[in-house]
Length: 164
Image 1 (cartoon, rainbow, N blue to C red):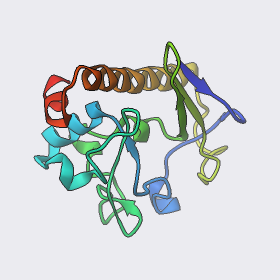
Image 2 (image 1 turned 180 degrees about the vertical axis):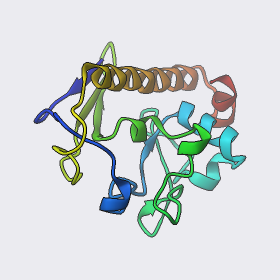
Image 3 (image 1 turned 90 degrees about the vertical axis):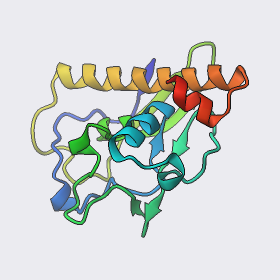
Image 4 (image 1 turned 60 degrees about the vertical axis):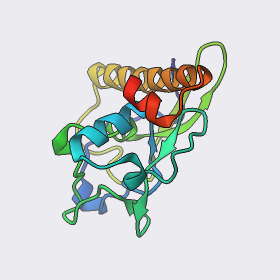
């Protein structure tokens, strides 16, 4: 389940050159599924782009360079976007990760990224956008659940990466 809270976003469009890719910070949350997609798309080893191979509840964090995402190109575009390997939470923008409630069923908490200068501008957000956010959030949670399950079975990082 995805819990969205905060003031609803009615309009938004990504204008990353206008805001200088404000959202593309170091430490972006990624799942084991994201890691697998990034590894396949870039040919890099996880230790090349992760802060640590140790997970916190199934989450990992991308490295940065000068406090920016390691995959941010000089023209401020995402080098993973064109390769189809953009992390789930990057795809969920303008919503930000705000935690996971570890209960019988995991609950993903997200909130609008009100520091984004194009919130309230641009295209009107439709029900399709909301459905896409919910779908991405559920995919994120499935990745977390898979990681936790495989870790509890005694698998290490490399073995888990092969299973997803």
